[in-house]
Structures are given as C-alpha cells and as structure tokens.
Length: 200
Length: 200
DNA sequence: CGCGCAATTGACTCATATCAAGATACGTGG
DNA sequence: CCACGTATCTTGATATGAGTCAATTGCGCG
Image 1 (cartoon, each protein chain N blue to C red):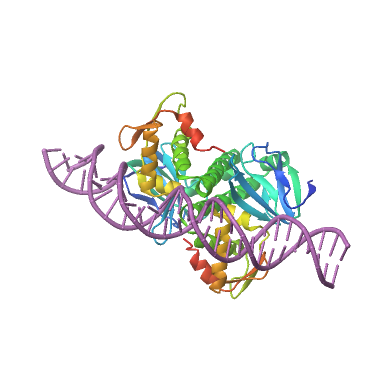
Image 2: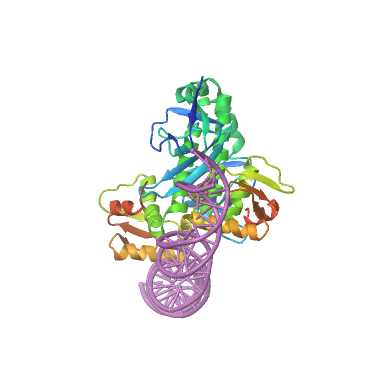
C-alpha cells in the first residue's frame, strides 16, 4: 500500500528529470506541475487538487516538477505496483488510456489558449475552467477558492502577475466577479465569463 | 484492412468534433492537426509526416481538425478494429499507452514554448525540433525540407507569419541558416540554433 | 514567359511586459 | 484580540516585442 506524506506550502514533491519511481495521489491540498527554463521562466502545466493523480503515465523520468501550493497530504505508491497491476488487468490499461486521452485533450486546449488567446480570454477561461473541471454548478453565482497565487496563475496562462491582476480588476469593474478575499472570489455571471473565454 | 485515400494540398481529412470513427496513418505527404476559434484564429497542434498516425487515442470525437498540407496519401482503418484488437492483446494497450505518453510530453514541451519563449526561441526550437524528432543528423550542416507554409509555422508557434519571416531573415543574416528555396533550408550550425531555443 | 500567390520587408501601432510605488491581507507575537 | 511587519497583490508610468497594415519581391506553376 501507499505511504502518506505531508508537504508544507512551497515544498517540492518531485523534480523534472528525476526517475519516475512513484505514482502520487493528492489527498488534501493542492499542487502545481510545472516546467522551467534555465533562466527561471516557468510554465505551469496543471494544478491538482484532492483526488487527482500524477505519475500514472509518462516516460522513464518525470517531465514536470511538482510542488505543494498549500499545505497538502499526498499518497505515494511505488510505480512498479502499477506496472504489474497493468499487466494483470487489461481493463486497467484501458482506464489509464482514457485518462491519458483526457489529459492530452486538456493539453491541446491549453495550447490553443497559450498560443492564440488574449489576456482577457485567458483569465476568463481559467476561472470558468477551474469550476467546470471540478463539476461545479454554473447557474447563478459561483463562489470559488483559488488555492494558487497570482504568480502561479500567471505562469499557467503565459502572462505576468501584473496582467492577471489588472484583468481581474477589470472583470470586477465590469461586475463579472467579486473579490471576496485574495483567494476567494465569486463569479457573478459565469456564463458571460465563459463567453469571454471564446470557448472553441 | 485499411482503405487508402488521396488528398490534395489543403483538403480536409477530419473536422474537430466529428465522431471518431477512424484511425489514420500517413503514407506519403504531410498533414497538420489544428484547433480553431470561431473568429478564425488557429493553433496548429502538430504536423504529421509519413509513418505517423492520428485518431489512435482520444475521446469520442476528434479533438482536432486534420488537413493535408501537400498532396498526401492516408490509410484509414475503422476504429472498431483497433478497439477489439486492444481487448485481445494487452501488449498493444501498453504500446498505445507509451505512444500517449510521448504525445503528452511533446504537448507539455509545446506549452512551455507557447507560454514562455520569445519569437526567436520559438523558431529556433521549431527548426531543430523538426530534425531531432525525425532522427536527423546533427553534426555539421543539416538540409531540411519544410512541407508547411509560413502561416502553418506561425500557427504552430503562436506567432504571425511576418514575425516568422523576420526571424528566419535574422537567422540568415547571422549565418545560422541558408534559405535554399522557400521550403528548403540548411541549418549551418544546428547546435548554435538549438542553444538559442533554450532547450530546458 | 508572365501571372499569381506566398513570402519578405517596411512603417507604425498596440497589447502586454517591465519597472516602480503604494495598498491590502494575512500571520505572528505581544 | 489587536498591532505590527511582511509578503502579495494592485495600481501607475513607461518600454518594447510582436502584431497590424501596406507595399514590394520573387518563387513556382501553368
């Protein structure tokens, strides 16, 4: 069985390039997966919250670094267990393949966002996508708690922290959102926001 | 068995959102996979040349449109055949899973490129990546034939056609490349170009 | 050989980045 | 529980890389 690990905010779980020895599942908290360039530029590939996994698929070495963005608990399983379970149970391989499909499609959507969308569209897509992905309600107002910092959001969207902040301010001025605290906000008109995201 | 189809340059093979009925393999020529927004903005997700496939993995509907970029022949297989072969042969599922891993990693690399690299880094990465991926030599000069237009390159890199053109001109002025024709060019110092790409 | 489309080049604009202060929330210790 | 200090976020002023608009060039096809 797996070992449960506690990680404080900012702590590293895996480093890009490490041998892919384990599979992880988030029990509580939230993580960021990212790739970095030598000069410090970062691209956040994904955020993971409770219930989500990483390390399930991929090459011999982790292709992203993973860090906790708030205090988190993570379950860790040796990768070998998965490999043997895979061989024993073809149905499991199919399930994993479907998971890979979902991830690949999300990656492609994000490529469209990064390559072709404006700052406003990016931020709108992020806010609505964060809710949609976790199956949140979309009629009426939606209250969300963003576990990540503005810097994380910026690195996810290919923007600067200032542009994210300015865009949120504009959304607030337009009555699209309310900033309850730094991290908590209310989507006043989620469908209007979603339209702004230019969902393809 | 599969049916072989001929496609002229510019012809469509599948449209994003169509039911994923078939698996395709490129026999000759080259294809582009892309996603588009309602207003016409495009993000090219990948280019495929002879021997490469698409439709192998993914959800119930194609997540990209596919078009021939030059006259091409494509083999088409009903998707059902793959599904049943998959069920019969667990080893095949593993192979497919590895394929998905490779694609996912490429998508993540491209996210870093789209979100965080400069125009110069993007074009350099494209040129060297095109050769590396197809296992080309990298010592001395490398002659390559790019099947796609500048517009396709731009839509792959999240740039405009003008920026791609200007960047190639700069590389030429710096002696990094020679433009033999529109489509054929020689990387004079592939390793210098690769350094420019800030390969993480 | 000339026509037409793709690519290049040039002038200028603009969205977003950068640099630089402030403001505000949050944790800490008194 | 409140005040303080600090990191994070917001806001403002300015810079700049890439986009846009507009010719011009030149390759490749008929």
